[in-house]
Length: 470
Image (tube, rainbow, N blue to C red; front, side, top):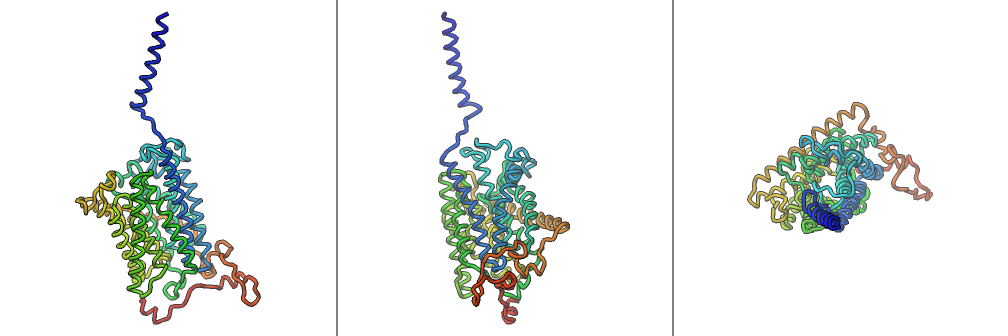
C-alpha cells in the first residue's frame, strides 16, 4: 500500500522539477508582449500609409496629363510587392543566411513563419508582425524610384522592372544590412531604418533609370511645372506622419529607443525644412512651399540611418546640413549636369541617404543605443570608414544591377513610351483615363479627350533664361 503512494509522490515531484528545469533550462519560453506587438502593428500601418502619401507627393509635382499615371505607379507597387514579399521576398531578405549574401528559400510562402516570435529578429512580437513591418519598407523603396523617371516609362515595363529590381536588388541588400549573417551587418555597418537599403538604393537606381531612358520631351526648353502643389503638400505631410512608424518602429518595441528615434526623426525633418527654405530664399530670392516640403523629406531621409543611434542635437545638425546638401544637389548640381531626375528622387534620396549614412558614422553613440557603436565624434573614427564602405557598396550594386536589369528588359520590351503618347500624357495613353473633368466655359460641358490631351502645363523658357541656365 505504501509503494503506490511513494510512486505517486515521486511522480509529482519529478513532474514539478522537470517543469522548473524546462522553464529555466535549454528551451526558454518565448512570450509575445502585447504592448510591443501593438506598437509594431501600428508602425507597420504608418509605413504602409507612406506609399499612398508618396503617390500624392509625386502626383502633385507632375503635369496634369500625367497625374493619375504617377499616382498609379506608387499605388500598384503596394499590391505587387506585398504579394512578392509574402511569396519569396521576405525569405530572400531575412531567411537563413547563405554565404552572407542572401537568405535561403526556407520561408517561401511564409512557410514556418507564424505567430510565435523569432528571437533572431524580435523576441517580443509575433514573427508575422515583423514580416508585415519589414514588408512595408520593401513596398515603398521601388515606389521611390518612380520619381526619377516620372512621365516617360511604359506601365508594362515599369511593372516588370519593379518586380525584378525588388527581387534581385532590394532583397539581397536588405539581407546584407539587416539579415542575420549579412555581410554588412557582420562588418558593423549601421543602418537603423534604411538609409542604405531604402534611400541610397532607390535614389541611385532612379538616377540610372532616368539616364537610361533619356530626358522628357521639352526638358530644358520648357519649364515643366507642378500641376497641384496642395496635393504635394498633403503627400509630404503623410510622409512626415508615417515616418514616425518608419524610424521609431525600427526599435521593434515600445521602449525608450523608440521614443529617441521618434524625436530625432521629427527634429531632423523640422531643421531641414528650415535650412532648405533659407538656402533657396538666399539664392533664388523667394521661399517656396515646394522647397519646404522638399526640405522636410530631405531631413527625414538624412536621419533614417542614424535615428536610433544619435541624440537630439546631432539630429538637428544632420537635418540642417541635409537640407542644404540636398538643395544643392537639386538646384545646382542637376542644373549644371543637365540630367532629368523628374521629381528629384536622386537629389533627395540618393544624396540625402548618403549624407545620413556618413553622418551616422560621425554622431552615433553607444550611450543612445548600446547595440550600435560610437562614431568619430565619440572616439571611434573606424565607424565612419565602415559607413563609407556600406554607402559605396550600395552605390555600386545600385548602378551595376539596375543597368543590367534595364539592358535585359530592353531586349524583350520597350521601356519608354512613344513620343506621341508622351505628348498626349500617360493618363490617357497608358491608362485611358484622366484625373480632372474640365468643363468648356462656353457650353458648360466636359471637354473632349482630344482637347484634354492638348492641355499642357509646360511653359516655354525664354531664350535669355535658357542661355543663363546654360
